[in-house]
Image (cartoon, rainbow, N blue to C red):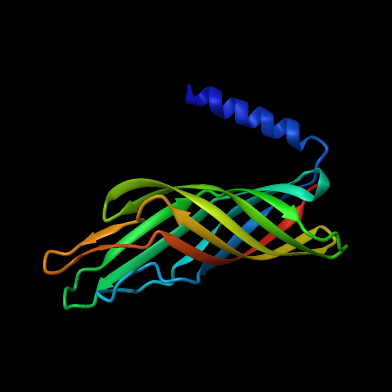
Length: 188
């Protein structure tokens, strides 16, 4: 049944994309918010996000953006436990974009959508889902596209639960704000 769903999505995407602009590239950035909601744990990683990006232009200033963002994060208890906890995740935002003003080189936009996420935290896999809203500006120089943006994601559950044998149990926050920059090349 799942394979039929993917075939349907692929055919729908191909029919929508026929005759539209397509840009492919990469996106990267990091969190602006702290994903820890208490003082017992410190983040000891850079908390970056990086991955590929596909942008499909639609009529009337609309567009679809699909990303695959990889993250690797580490946490260290601040109360004397030397154990370090690590988490890796892949986020797949599916976004509907709307260009606000039709300037030739600079195009401000808003975006909203859905983001499933797969995670592995301390050897345990997990899945969560998020709602995404954001905005930014796209700069166009020939076929090159540069798109800085700010995105807010609210996840349906905590990305990780840290359980310490000598201390508290800590849930990471469900709210995430990212500063991202997309660099893409318009294929057609």
